Image (cartoon, rainbow, N blue to C red; front, side):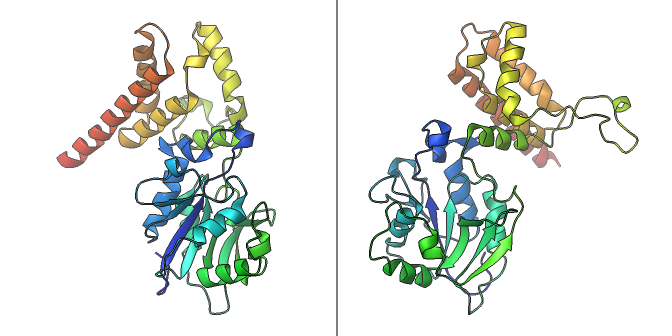
Length: 309
């Protein structure tokens, strides 16, 4: 929740072309099994923002949101901001303005909402380690945004956000790269999915570790090499690599580690592979269905354990 008495809204920008991702709809990409836009919506709702506005293709807006489209479509984040602010909502004093592809939306929103705006401030936003403003990771006074937009007289298409934000009195919050991370490229997506499983421990025996508990040498695979390793390992085992969705397998590992136990993660992904391979033709949709079945079983395991305690 925002400190103080300010009433909070949210505008989530979800109308980009995703050109560096091959033209895919970024908002619909899944991380931890949940579409990116739904993760951001959940974060702003948890902070107290009612009826968030999602600006982009209306088919992609989660339930409980107001869906609008910038005009013309794909005309940039400033046009999206203008479209979001045009939605009538007289009960909102401040608004979170966020990208739809944030990797850690809950952490980022909590940072933005940790303290009230001072009387002399129009907003607060995050700044990355290189000192760059993260305009789509901020909280702003609605009145200040509308006043700055009015000065542009509707000329918002294909214009940078700084034309509005640069006129505001802002408080900067320095943030690390992980907090402000978003997903612009396939490497970003692979890195984010790998991070979801980073807490699953290695199966390397204790003898291979130093006295301090650290590995004597790094065995980490760079995220961008996952596809190459998949191709190499699949060829070695005579498996069709194009039937294996890396994110699906990593999501199962993470969910089982969380709901059952960490050592159960590699065991479960092995069983997933056995089940996937015993039914003949390799079908990515069937892999996803099996993964969802196993994840649901892990959640039920956790619930049953909680009831017995």
